[in-house]
Amino acid sequence: MSETHLLTDLQLAVMRVLWERGEASVVDIWEALRPERGLAQTTVATLLSRLEKRGVVAHRREARQFHYRATVSEPEVRRVMVRELTARLFAGDVTALVSHPLTAREVSPGDLAKVKQLIDEHAAGGVVQEDAVQEEPIHARD
Image (cartoon, rainbow, N blue to C red; front, side, top):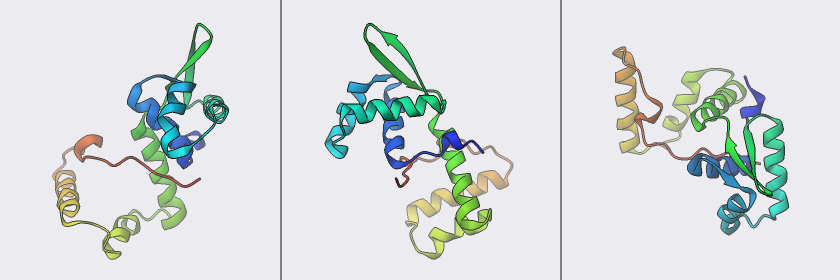
């Protein structure tokens, strides 16, 4: 498992900007996050520097400004973080992971229908695509 792909909520917010835009400067990211986060530009720059050391982002220099891009995809990060969640909270038991929201009644009828469809496709030997279901952005805690 790649520890570099385990991201905090704030790191995920930064990565989401990069995934959406493809490339962004510190100022671009700061402006995108400012309404909900209220971060200093130096905080964003520090986060990007640390993410770059972990190999999650890379930069190119344009004039006197760095432009960052993600080097890992959101599906890659999602897979690693779900694998970690499954291992840590459910002792690696995928059935327990899947049954948790069902037993807690946290699944809407529409979502349940989509999950049933995915299970049926998988059982029939089909390949379930990452984007087969409209996914919500991934969230984590700091």
